[in-house]
Length: 330
Image 1 (cartoon, one colour):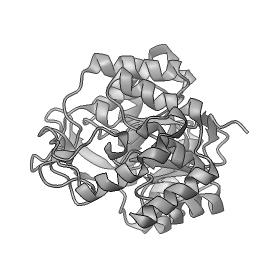
Image 2 (cartoon, rainbow, N blue to C red):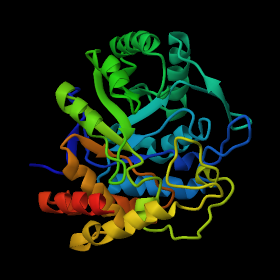
Image 3 (spheres, rainbow, N blue to C red):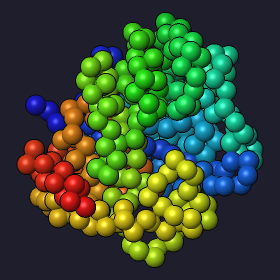
Image 4 (cartoon, one colour):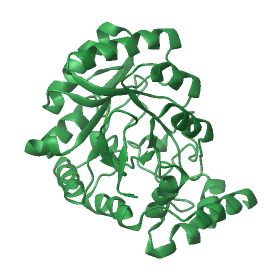
């Protein structure tokens, strides 16, 4: 069995088992109250080098969103890929409304008309004629209105603008609504060794969907770089975490209980010469043959470390059981 590639559901699209999430390379952006929504300042030239290095190392799946950096992530990704666009599978998202000039998220729009406007804008920023996987970015959208958006996505597929689509949501019943569409190929949801998602993984098995895993490193906690007392800069979303972002306290310090669990897992995650981050990705691959983790990155070094996980492959079933035992005890 090839452990370096995975299928996007029944779409016929094959991707590397590891994707790269492009939220962080969007740079700084904020909500209307001034709270940070990015991961702090970025060096666009370094981001470009990191994307290109990832492609060189076999990563063929890149996940972004129109809102990341209010369009900036899409633009940087397009610059990085250049003539190699056809070598990769591009996923982006829509549903948020933002002011690109002030880098501010201003709201959301779940109308079919906005979906078409957003798609046109993303195609332009990404410098491409089609989106391989188009994802609804409003996690709690009304299911009936989402059903209309699913039908709109089917129109995009017929027009050749989109190859497949998905919903980014942690609610299995909402994911089920989109999955009724013939070209729905995935659900994007949070999943990591500290925050398992058994219901969504079961749904993916039932409906032949790919499980695209955001926060595979628990917003960096599983990367091994957070210690008690470390504070994050003001432009980083983790410095003023919203309610949906557990694991960090006000002021950006990591939750000591979460750090204790990470420490307890360290020995099994670093088996076989893996780094903690590589072990966390290996856990996801062992968890299901449908998982495609999409860790974030900002540097070439991070790109190399994440891509290096592919060579190690998934944890063994014995190691998976060991993780379960440690977490139950913790």
